[in-house]
Length: 317
Image (cartoon, rainbow, N blue to C red):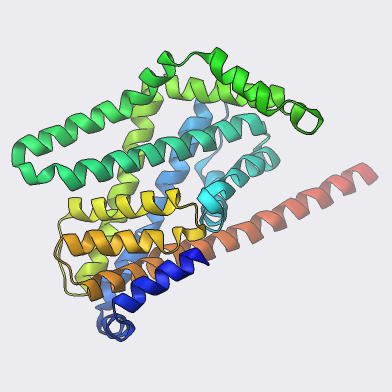
């Protein structure tokens, strides 16, 4: 309800009639191109998870990773703070035999590290490029530092503190049986954060996702007759996503849209076109990925049912 209230306020301030007129007058070709960009975005996200799982000793083909990734993305968008993404850990166990503690460590690593990079990229691109060569040098240096910062933080944080906290959380009958798994998951998370190679690979893939998502924003504005630089589009995407995730609202509804409109307006785009771009971004990104996730879930559910039937048949024989 909070998200809907914020989204409604943004649309109302931006004049719904202007948004509708902008959608009707938008050039179709850039919108179609923005939809197509979802393909490399999904592939890169699946590759990122594949790299992390391989580091923990689990080899899963990219073909198997993609439908799980789609289901995870859909689940994360409809749950507060994207917590539904943990469904991937369960699906990896069912389909590939990956222990939940390993899968949960990978999902936690991806969520925390990508949110951290989103915040850093947003801060760097909003504040520094205006300073010319010095600013861009600072952006590059900031990205290098941010990429490897988790390793330094992990090495400076004693595991004893983390183990004490987990034991306190899992104390008692209800959660006591999860203590061993929680501690092992935390150890796996530390292994991922401690590896410079994994951090570099994950950062490169994640920043590539940001660039493709920024291209989507830029294409939407092109369709509306506006133009911004790709780095500004990436800053718009990163800032709005940070706001949506931190709001803990499903879909980041309202918060992400309000920030997207505010940042675009700061780059000289009219409020009406900014609000239209926010609506169109939902149409070309959130909606197609949600539909693809539902299709992937149906296929994975059907495959699981077939496997159960085959197991029952073999046991009967």
